[in-house]
Length: 188
Image (cartoon, rainbow, N blue to C red; front, side, top):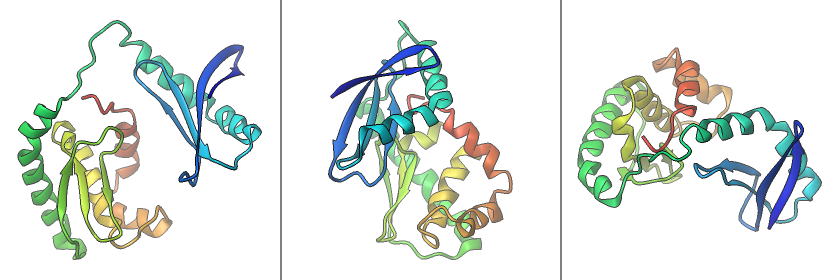
């Protein structure tokens, strides 16, 4: 359902999606300027509006970021690109996972390369490490951050202090790299 909210003297239109599967709220801004909030089904709209207000600065930064591309072609990777680069991305992921895992010594099931729209990587409870094929196009420090981040989830399946300590063991500057990666578009 489409809603409006006033933020910093501007009316913002957003789509509210209520989901029985959602465990937390999620705010997304898409390249066409569409704003979508996904929330647990039983959450009151006042809580949703408070959440949006808390994210005002981030929201306006994202809107401004996408406005710079208004009317310009934004690079999109097709299924053909995924198939073209999948093997190369897999080789990169295997090499970097093995490199970092000589120190960590974590056991994992398998490494998969996917064509995800919103994630650079993920780690499943079954010990599968999944990476977006687009990591191939990231700077080396960002690639390594994604690899190490998912590798550390094999030991700490959360974002606790223990988890970040594990990440910091290999990447002492992970905070800076993480910030830069957040500003990186998935449409590289």
